[in-house]
Image 1: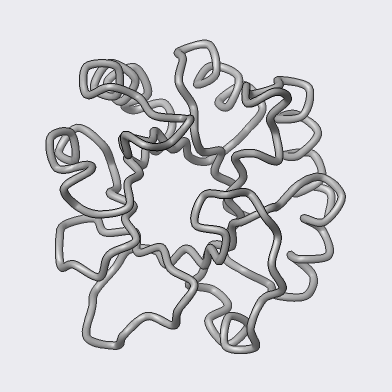
Image 2 (image 1 turned 180 degrees about the vertical axis):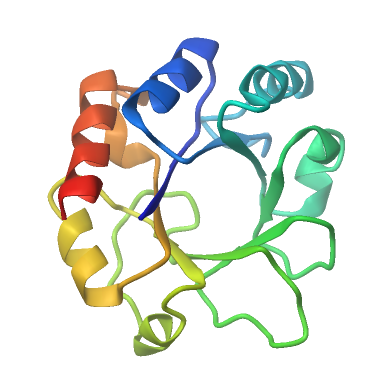
Length: 178
């Protein structure tokens, strides 16, 4: 099961994600996010992660990520746009005319609020990463119900808006033991 931890802001957080066995990290360059990383910081974190763990730059639209997209392995946006290494995130079923590497179903759009999954998400099994309000209490039931390719967590491993290493470890353990 592919597991991504999103909203990282420090090299230490990347080290822990690698140590714990996450497959990918997400760095947010959407300026209104509480997890926002500046262009310079995002580049430094992407270069630090390069070759050690897959990196996703995350924004709402391509304009949020375009300055740094070429430094990351993937570009995750909530906009159907044909770009290299696109990870399309949405709460709507993706159009068949857009090519993407991964589709992230996220009804919360970064809010961390859990929403029930529509039936069509199950039909995408093998192609979809689920996100939005996942935590150690619900991730296993989501995996068993949806059978996604992967899961993506952010606020579910935070205390007071900061990544909590114990929660990061517990989450990945819950995913691996499900």
